[in-house]
Length: 178
Image (cartoon, rainbow, N blue to C red; front, side, top):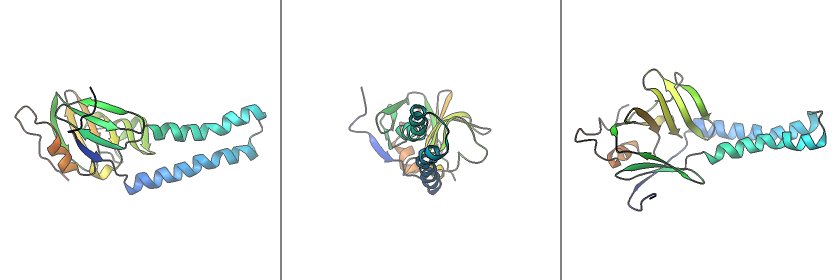
């Protein structure tokens, strides 16, 4: 089993904020080894390890970045650089395009808070705890699947909601809010 050739594919464009934050953090993380080289009073063997940590962090977070999404009649795939994360949609209860779900009142529980996107587990009072794979907070779609909530940010939220499987005859909720 895997991603289907008949799946609807969606891009995961970066918002201006994600782009600026990622560029700024990348520059900082790439500059740190140079700063460490001239400022850390450590043994040469330890220096290499300490200097490599910022680059390892940058690469590690980049591996979790979102490249796009694929929707079939049974599942959602979150496409990453080296693998894809699968979300079963059998218990899909609703899907609503609702911009701005991730904002100032959203707490990051664990994950990336803007470096390459908002990726991980988050909490806010409106949706409770949810898992996010978001590259543009202005294009968010909220999926209620069983007792879990997922948030994604496809390039075309309305078309994404329409591509999802029907929800037990009850419809998908209103396709676009915002």
